[in-house]
Image (spheres, rainbow, N blue to C red):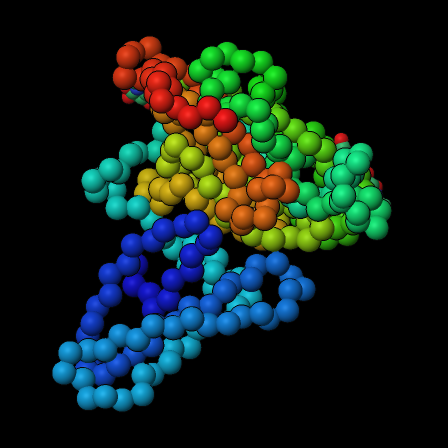
Amino acid sequence: MVTDFIVIAPGQTIDALLTADQPAASYYMAAHTYVSSEDVPDTTTSTTGIIVYENAMSSTPRTPVLPAFNDTPTAHKFYTSLTALVNAPHWVPVPLNVDEHMFVTVSLGLIPCEAGSNCSGPLHQRLAASLNNASFEFNTKLSMMEAFVNNVDGIYTTDFPNQPPLVFDYTNSDNNFNTTIVMTSKSTKVKKLKFNSTVEMVLQNTASLGIESHPMHLHGFNFHVLAQGFGNYDPINDPKKFNLVNPQARNTIAVPAGGWIVIRFQANNPGVWLMHCHMDIHVPWGLSMAFVVENGPTHSTTLPPPPRDLPKC
Ligand SMILES: *[C@@H]1O[C@H](CO)[C@@H](O)[C@H](O)[C@H]1NC(C)=O
Ligand SMILES: *[C@@H]1O[C@H](CO)[C@@H](O)[C@H](O)[C@H]1NC(C)=O
Ligand SMILES: *[C@@H]1O[C@H](CO)[C@@H](O)[C@H](O)[C@H]1NC(C)=O
Ligand SMILES: [Cu+2]
């Protein structure tokens, strides 16, 4: 794909080749933020670097024209134009038999303040975020990985749901402040997976407190990005749009603001793997969950024990 701009979400990486075929001169390369949520004022500041061609006469660099800070159609066009190089090194074909079909809402919300906390919102609520209405809270006593390896109870529960607890009109902005939708609660729910099972996950953004693009990052795996779009995911018609041939493979993907995205991966890496939003503030708000992938049948598919010098907290 040939482009003169790149859209990149928090936590994503991208490889690009620059063709230096312009008249010898100096040129700015510039970046600014892309703001996906509505009603956010333009807070854009640009950052620039200068590319100077060898033997160029010194001159004022020319400034490129960037897409507008809120140009979602252009961001979407870029995100959906990327495909994989099939048969390139590390290419993995899309697994075709799905074992776990997950539909996961990605929401901002509110949570009641803990008794005795200094959280003092006007309604005694604080900002939260959730996946399938589970606002994830990390255990501070023991890591989930140690709990997995040593079979310790009480650190997480394996009941993360494959469906949201309530079906509603996810992207209808009439629901932005509907308390049935906005209120959430804390969770330590994870999803347990059989070794080598294939997971397909629809990530559905909701309008709760306003739509926003969340860059979701999965540890431990790359996933294929099969399709994406705006509005509510349509389980009848949207699967017809899946790219099972040459979809991009990633470990971080921007869920479209007020839209959905479908990813698929094979759980061939045992251990505890977090999936979380890559906007830093959304993690303490609860926008994460974890996969607990069981060991496989062989030595090389079994998680090694922690090193003997693992620091104790
Ligand atoms: C809030 O959302 C729920 C669930 O979709 C719905 O039943 C209820 O009618 C909504 N309330 C209002 C005031 O729209
Ligand atoms: C989420 O959970 C909270 C608290 O348990 C509940 O009040 C709310 O209605 C639920 N919302 C959705 C969308 O499931
Ligand atoms: C995992 O499943 C794939 C087929 O989807 C198979 O080719 C591979 O051998 C399996 N890996 C292990 C370690 O069982
Ligand atoms: Cu987020």
